Length: 125
Image (tube, rainbow, N blue to C red; front, side, top):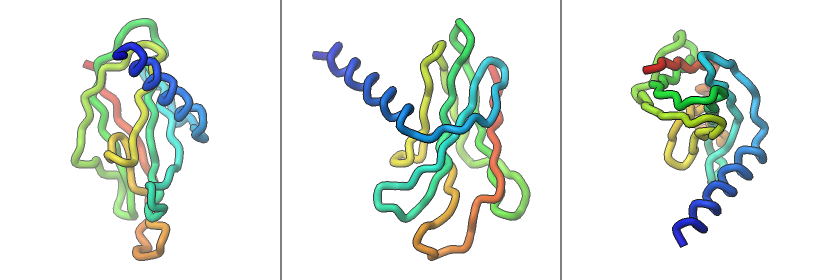
């Protein structure tokens, strides 16, 4: 049963990653960084969601910091992420848990605040 659950999780993650419109941001130190724009479940906020893929043949131990600019220059978020990337297995952000995501804009016009620029810093350990 556990094996079946793992297979189903892998298939869902793979299907989900292929169904998104991913754009490559950069490849740095053997890590391919992509992003896509996604909405939350009630369609009120648009997010920038990140996907990280280790394109090398050995595990990568990294720390990730997301940077954002809402009109006051690039600044880091309060969250740092410690991630171990296995080869060719992507780690994908999650809008529901706000993991590896930045808010881009409110879709219901309650705020005119819009993400102007973003970047991601990756440090290998």
